[in-house]
Image (cartoon, rainbow, N blue to C red; front, side, top):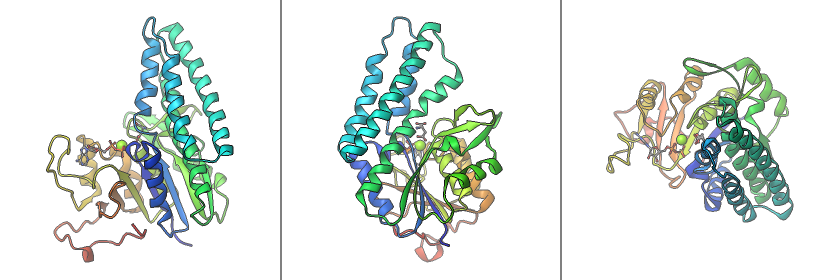
Length: 320
Ligand code: ADP
Ligand code: ASP
Ligand code: MG
């Protein structure tokens, strides 16, 4: 059986309708029959959701219009992307979610403070909304073989929070995924990034920027051939491009080097992303959604950094 490829697209890659089309084209271009697509929330949505909580904690603040604005952004996005039937279903679910959010915010307003779990539940809606829309969008385009299955990572990824962050409980997470994906499934899994569940059954997140980690967790759970993290820059750069405009793309990095860069603040990849890949020796590619013809950066156990020729580099199995 062909091995899985796991793609992860960040918020900047699913910012608007044009971005959704671009992501779909990247997925459709890959001939591999088993691919998982982990998505972040649309750009700015997690910040906006957390902003709602802060707003609700503020005396005399009025939050309903801010909830309405988030709902409207997603409704407008969906209107241009899916059929009337899929749009109606999407809008109904969105309205239900927004009512739940407003209920939680009302509690926050009354007690003037929020709990961690409330913030986790509220901030996780962005990934639910982006993936619930992308799944019917990709299915209705009809350009891929096989099925499109929406996977809610809260039903799969079980973590135990500790001083080093969330520790994945692999055995139970693997069993959860096997339960949700029918044996012999061929097609695309559309997976919510960022969200997970604790061993006590409470909804949690993997921390800010955590969808990269989700991507590699699913890479490990599916024993993937490769994990591709699609973002808005050409790869891991020698410096933050917002501070150093002529920073250069690093062709290849070892897992350790990438981990160090991430721990010291290179926002392009979440520091825990490498762990699941190291254990199973899965290469991670960082690539640009807006320039998919570029090679990006390869993160693996034994990089061949001194030669930048294609010949010395492990091949990318997918077409892009
Ligand atoms: P995504 O929405 O794809 O998750 P992020 O905003 O989380 O994207 O990460 C990508 C951004 O990280 C880039 O746009 C860039 O500004 C920033 N960045 C900081 N340091 C680096 C680096 N060393 N290499 C590449 N990008 C970096
Ligand atoms: N949406 C989450 C965040 O903004 C997770 C992610 O995008 O990686 O932090
Ligand atoms: Mg990110």
